Length: 46
Image 1 (tube, helix red, strand yellow):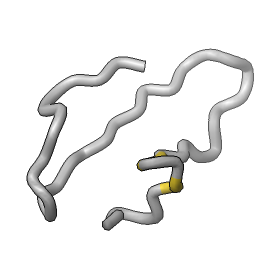
Image 2 (cartoon, helix red, strand yellow):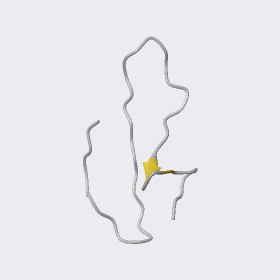
Image 3 (spheres, one colour):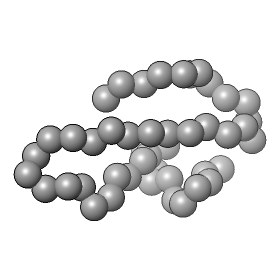
Image 4 (tube, one colour):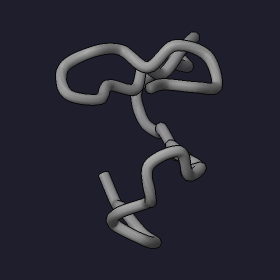
């Protein structure tokens, strides 16, 4: 995992997450993102 860009954003600000998943014989059908142990749903999390 490589992280780039700003480490913090202001409350209500936007952040873009990008994952470059490679390797293995099967392509991942889905990548899940988590914040504070909770899965991030859709395009927003508060």
